Length: 363
Ligand code: ADP
Ligand code: GN1
Ligand code: MG
Image (cartoon, rainbow, N blue to C red; front, side):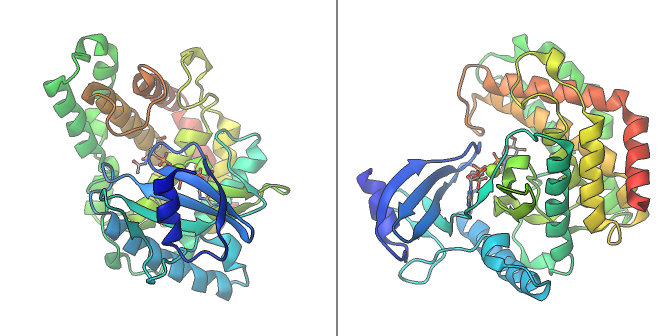
């Protein structure tokens, strides 16, 4: 085990000494390790300080939200040890370790008997993840959102994300702009739509809620046997937001028939059965909490989260791949292209998406 990591682990209040530490998971942001001891396994993470300028605020949000969820889960007769993340404290009682290089580290008990999926196997599994994310929003619906730090300013501010893309184009830091003209034109043609959700918030048509903001399928742990959604993880981006952000980001990832970084774009389609399955699961938990406009805007959430994510991948490609971890050349460009292909598919199936959401909201 690397000495540096071992020294960091020593500062957490673990029940036994670590026997094995291995890199773990497929996240794009944090450095994640699985730590095994004779008395259980743990997840150790170094928070990306490039992505999160104030990691201590991230940790404060996570403490507040997990403490609140624990209470809600108990009230509902659930098992907090399995259904929410909980932080392992340091010997000094802190929720994180700050190392000599200025990096922030945190630890969670590993939630056993669960799996996380990078692609949904079946509509049934995807519906169960919809239930889990819907339940997460529902359990936090009375949490005082103003207590949370906005850890990444304008995280789902799609017009601002569009502007960041324009800035990256203007800078052209790596000389890549000349090779991505069709992708740039694709975004420019949709600029006028980028503000639809934000306008609805500003005009008071839809409320700000506590949202997760990064509802990829691999951010929910599913029961390894039943597939039931057990625990929503990756709480770094929990902040005030619109319900459609979480719905939309889940669809972006899980209703794509191809992987997020598929290079063969002919494989990228919107799966309407997956869309319907997620809508059913999510709305089962949230239909009574949402207003009519929020429900109506769920498909727009799917489109804007997909467009936004594509713009972020494209901007990062132009900036030299500084934000999202990449594992091959042009990885972020490949990711951007799948997102744009999926946006096109959503545009082609718009009426069906609207219809499905209406039907599921009444079931
Ligand atoms: P990132 O922000 O980089 O995506 P995540 O917090 O999502 O980091 O963690 C990466 C992966 O590690 C997850 O997709 C999941 O597979 C696994 N993981 C994270 N926390 C736990 C946990 N408490 N128990 C079991 N697996 C976990
Ligand atoms: C990142 O952390 P991870 O891998 O779950 C990103 C999301 C993107 C996603 C695209 C904090 O999610 O916003 O939608 O990659 N998280 C952050 O795969 O930027
Ligand atoms: Mg993750």
